[in-house]
Length: 222
Ligand SMILES: [Zn+2]
Image (cartoon, rainbow, N blue to C red):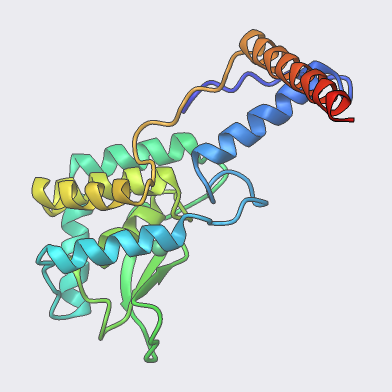
């Protein structure tokens, strides 16, 4: 996580107050859908599109039954990789309580649009379209504290794919994310207060200059 040094009690409309607003926006931009309730899950469609291309290119192993999916999940939960990702999610998302070892259940009815979903505790897979390893790993990435499809979700699902499918698969998925300009590396640091003030001043000066020249040009045209 980047460092967000908020001012404690800034005066309304002061520079410090505006800097806090900048930090809130910066943080939300680094993980769309993941930071604030007011930011919708805006990268979901592109993430799905990337996953479809990925699944079409790579041969994704299918599960024969829900029991088999559970067996696979239990093997994953025993690994160091999973413990590490779980630890990270607890540190980043202390407010949310998820289950460290979600169990998998089958979908009761046919749902044509959803192959899987999760509430963070249980993973529900469609027994017709959702019985594959990637769909399960996608839902598992949600259970690790990423209830959206922003940057931290993609980072997490890439880790899972690398560890439980293979390096080649991870590469293909990453390429598809990148092709759609979806960030999946570490989030960027925000500007420090001093740098932010300096860049704000610079922008204001540029605007001033532009207005000055435009006014001049308008005068000449008369
Ligand atoms: Zn999802």
